[in-house]
Image (cartoon, rainbow, N blue to C red; front, side, top):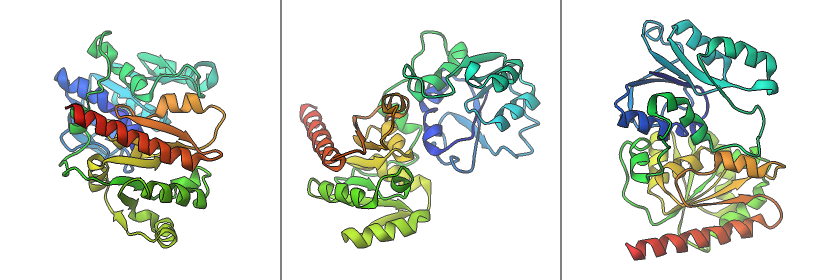
Length: 310
């Protein structure tokens, strides 16, 4: 089988329960990722090999099934060129009628998904899992077993960290969340628990502004692999709607996930909430930083209670 997923890290991580189920059924998988999400999964995972979309060896491979787990037209053209007898992917019906007509001629097993935010939408994990159901059986369901999922995401687990990870990222601003509001949340969180401020090296400017404003040291990561491991080892995570919340979601880390104010928040969070971790969704509207801090307090309390009962 070949799976094609040419999207961001969070999108790639939504494949994890499907990959786990394929592994349990001893179905060998090659996967085509983009350079952006190439390190989203653990090296072994259930993958025979990772392949770049321009890899010359790709066209020489033979697959019985191709799962096109993206809406990128490049992926569908690739699937056509590989001539697998079973080509499974999405079409959007009347939401994108011309594209859907083309896809219905290309796919041997088309799966409908709305072109917009459907209020009845399933989680992205469940949507992707359905692509493999003809191989896995109709009764198969995506796992929420954290130990199993973590093994597909983290190469080398780190020792547990008593600190709460706070993602320092310009994604806050890209979501329209003001810098001073993020600082307010950070200061409230610092009053609750020891914090570990984390950022990607490509977000140096935002991280420097944050560090100067709050007076803290920030751990900067040049690679996705230790960044994932750090999140997975944390006591909890506070982050905007980003790939970080999906790392936490697959590794069982309690998460305060902050989403931008939006009309269809319920539909958006139903699709993109952390999958297998305790979490609270915060909409960044009036007094949201206080709500975020209260959510962190509650998640830490619940985690402590679970630990006490073990």
